[in-house]
Image (cartoon, rainbow, N blue to C red; front, side, top):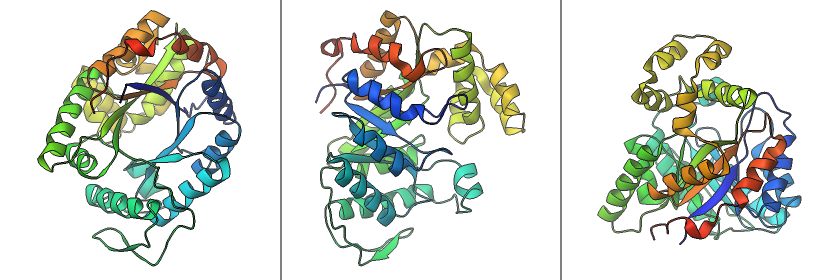
Length: 332
């Protein structure tokens, strides 16, 4: 397998929700292979994925990461099958733990036992996508009798992970692990963990993907947009520890003490954004993407800033100029 490049649809707080579809169309025209479609507070992810699939020609849609504490494996499998059937194209799925605010605050579901819940969900979902009738009595997932009318055995399952427990689940059961807002060094450490755990249970290591915020020659508005979004993650478990480890612990403490998001965004320094993003000229973008691949990422999904570049058109045109043959081969 060779290293690949995709995009993740952003959920910028300062842009119209409908821009998501235009970003996907722009990526399709640019020859991007994969479009990740997550979910926040705008569209239902399966509805958005269907709209994107119907308005593009080639991109492969990857839905998620979706919180395993919110949707059951049956609901997720039905969503994947629905999108794939309606757009006449294979669809992949990504699962994650999300955050206490989204899982416990919005639908009032428990945010605990995450690794066990992920393991049970991946096992059940794989069975459903392969066309089996579900019959599971796991610790976190119990379901009997459901079977998809349109199985999706081609669909891959990705696990979003930060800590060692979720990384072990991904290594043992998933097709891919995805990281978000991390440095190349963090990718390298995760790559080593994946390879070790997968090898210990006698299976090939899953692919490793990473989401990377990106902007071509960013100005003040682009930096502000990236900072506002990063501020959402400062207090979140896992993310906060990562940012603190990069030397921004005071910012994390302020976030966890309840400082207003706007105030936090104003305090996010460019140095933090540059450590977890790909910012600058086409040459700088190419070098940064290569750094993630060289650290062990099989797939880099850029998250395009659109504050100064509607639909990320200029950024995606620049990315198209990056010669994929110059990216290192991914691990098999």
